Image 1 (cartoon, one colour):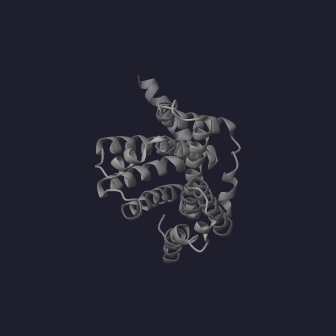
Image 2 (spheres, one colour):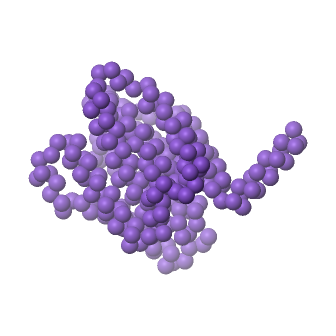
Image 3 (tube, helix red, strand yellow):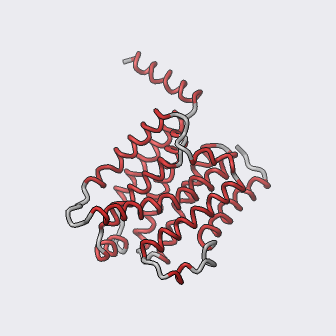
Length: 261
């Protein structure tokens, strides 16, 4: 699809304007004056940021609002949840929980989940929803690249090394593409939110020294590239399966290959 000049301006406004609001839109709220613990301060900030994203969605792309339910196809939701557990489960199951109380684990999961709620409301809800009128593939690719680029700011604000942050941006981009695909396939934004929360959950159990060592070090590009290929391939497959005509074509091709063998 070729964008007109008006369309191109609208796309830029969604990407740049939305990013500006998402990053700086809550600075006027004096959250620091509430004297909350880091946990509750983060939960409050993420909650307010999510509310802002919902307002943007309601104003600019209300057609995306139905995805904030659990979809209308339970079978697809279960398949999508199965994919999430298959991909994220091993890292979650291998956490050493012995030195943490149930409260610690629960609060860590809530903390990670609110990261997913905030970032997915914005990237999958508003950015993808605002671009969807220009085509599913266009919206999926651009919103995912945008999501990856947002992580480049961690060089400045996160104290991360350039090598690690660049790899993180590429990884986040492919993760974002799979997240969009899971949302399209299941019809619910809560599936990628759960995946996002589970992906960030193990990091909550790292010590400050461990975390600093990781983010200030180099990048494992072999792992990043392999992960990117898997996420993009799986995401593309899910998007194809989400549309009856393309799905039927894919099934016909599979039957032809099976008959040849």
